[in-house]
Length: 361
Image 1: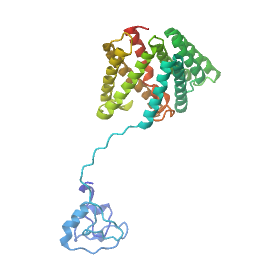
Image 2: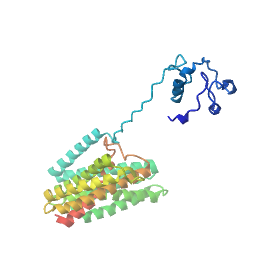
Image 3: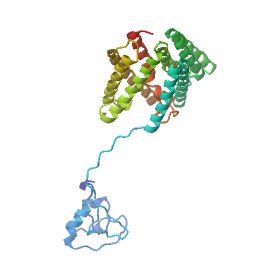
């Protein structure tokens, strides 16, 4: 603490009011002229020979006339203040990394096993993720905003959307989306009209945001090399997120969007782009039939952009709702929606670019 924060040395053995700080120090000062807050025992003066040491003690918080020890029997002597510089604190991750890594590895194993064994099983995995994500989203909307988006038509329509996209392609996905929106409008009519507009608006938004965007993953799987396309989509998104986290955690200084997500930095975005472009070049060269490495560079760049925007988009939703995570189902990650945030908007981007680069398969 600065010396200026302390007043002039007080009379030995007395604690004064704030007015005492303006009075001159020394033996000529009559302590009885100041109003006392409470009586304290009078300590006899010490010889002038010890004045220099006592003054130094006063400047560091000791009382006058300590002479190397405390005048009060029960008071412990203060330890000298350390002047050694405090070592910089290491940055700490905001989540339980062990739990996050364990859950991530487990989910990855389930996805890869279902993807390369039976395609229908993977469609089931997508459907379950969509239904759980809709449940998390509609629950948070009702809890935080009082918005009652009807879950039943959303869940049924969302599952139908994923299956239709896999069986009939884009045409089937659009038809299922339209029917789901209509079902939301009709289902909400069974309740009082108050709040009808906001409820159905939220319902249509939820239908588009979760199941419709997830349908593009099922459409990726339709191709002859469908498992490789889905694996490329998943790898690029995960690598982009990992690059953003690693580079941002180590070198991040300049905020990317502080009002939306204070933890994201421009350096992290550069890391996401670099990691995703390298991974994209490798995936297009070795996983995708007829792919070229330069196409992978463009694909990686697009994935880094869409994944970042998707993450910021859900951060905007959570900030509006006043929550940190959409759920608690996945230890170290939050909820299902907290893992789908970057995947959902990336799926149509990857699907479109792969169709342009190598065809629909």
